[in-house]
Amino acid sequence: MADSQITKQQAKAELKKLRQQQKLQAQERKANKKAKKASGEGFFSRIKQVFNMTRSYDKNILWWMLLAGIVTFAATFILISLILHWIFALVMALPFGLLAAMIVMNRRAEKAAFARIEGRPGAAAAALNTLRRGWVVSEEPIQIDAKTQDAVFRAIGKPGVVLVTEGPSGRANKLAAKAQKRLRPILRNEVPIHVVQSGRGKDQVPLPKLTKHIKKLDKSLNKHEVHEVERRLSTLPISKPPVPKGVDPWRARPDRKALRG
Picture 1 (cartoon, rainbow, N blue to C red):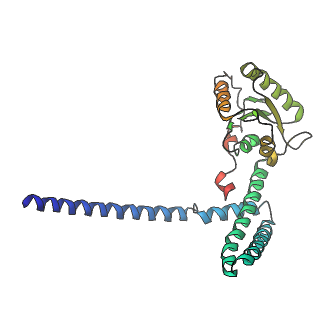
Picture 2 (cartoon, rainbow, N blue to C red; picture 1 turned 180 degrees about the vertical axis):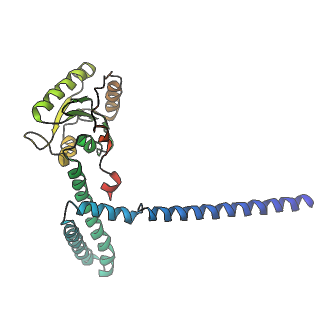
Picture 3 (cartoon, rainbow, N blue to C red; picture 1 turned 90 degrees about the vertical axis):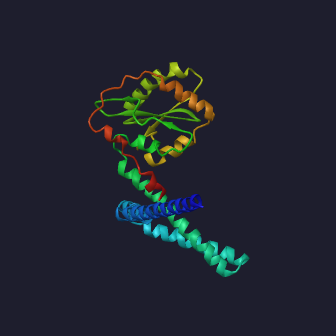
């Protein structure tokens, strides 16, 4: 009988302890939520930050968002109301209109982000880092001219090895040729090497269109071969050139959370 009472007391104590832990966890979650809201890290705060950043470069973003939202809402409402009741059409059209406005803001925000970094050293690397799964991107240049800060960045994907240059066409071609010369003994003729020049000059690809241009390249490798090429190139001994001042901040790239809205 005494043992039974002890067991009940222990169970009550454990239950009380568990409730206290749950209460503390709930308080902690609430405090974290308030802290995020106060620091501007909430969902709506991020949307506001993205909108304000984009509006500083694109004064008409609000009108484009309204146009996309209203047109999408109207089209969805009319289409669904012909099939279902108008109340269902209204309920379903509202989120579609908001989604269209958010998509427009996302696209404009991406252009604004690229406009902020275009022309700066490392802008091509920042654009390459927005490539999604299936790509292995070198965050640091594989070839660089310390005097002019012209550089070559590397991305490995299903098209093969893509070398993206920064700088005037003539100088960039010379850097790309040096990079190809170093890579060719490792890749032999098994893996294609593409050279893409980023910039606003003749035969160059503007920064906002860089990733789209790369994705359109002909596919030559599968997923396994991409990782194999990356493994082979990772063993390549590279003597890093002296890094000039201002190059290290290349790591500043468009905020992916901001681009997603």
